[in-house]
Length: 216
Ligand SMILES: C[S@@+](CC[C@H](N)C(=O)[O-])C[C@H]1O[C@@H](n2cnc3c(N)ncnc32)[C@H](O)[C@@H]1O
Image 1 (cartoon, helix red, strand yellow):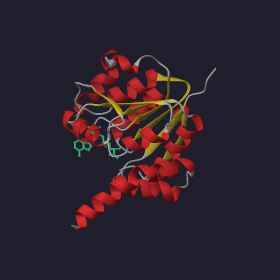
Image 2 (cartoon, helix red, strand yellow):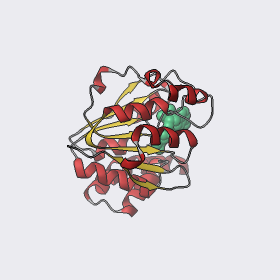
Image 3 (cartoon, helix red, strand yellow):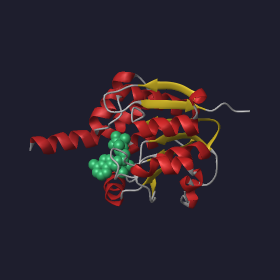
């Protein structure tokens, strides 16, 4: 009964709390949204990405990975295009089933994290056929929070980081989560470039890096 009540309260509060955070983007409200949705990124990380999105919204926002934060990104980018790419079919069904308003596509990275060195030496193998909905190089903001990359048998984020560097438009922003991990760090330095690093926000569950690309 207590659990049911908790679930109902959470469901009723999720969308209004996100809309309130969009109107009044203060850290305590973002922390509340995080708590209600069970989001992994820290409040400061969410708040920083959110401010970048609202500063450009309505914009074209591409997110590698679906999760408890998907509904948040979709609602924050009001009137814009937000597209999610996910490789885990079970997780895809679970998240899209409970966030019916989001637009998401299934993808297959066909990589294993253990092959990261070989892939780094042959970048042509990082090229990746994405769904037609992704289109060209005109994404204002890209968030890389997938695929899983916590051990050698997971796909690793080699292709998603590489593709983010190709798909972001000039003057765009790329955010990469879990940059405290070796492979994310190496791929970010290699493909997104230390010179473009705007900020790094540390957290207990994964550091977030923000890369900004100057326009011309
Ligand atoms: C670290 S998660 C992203 C979490 C998201 N930012 C959130 O707050 O929910 C990245 C990837 O891990 C996988 N993943 C995360 N949680 C999972 C779960 N409970 N079951 C299966 N796969 C999961 C999914 O493929 C997802 O795209």
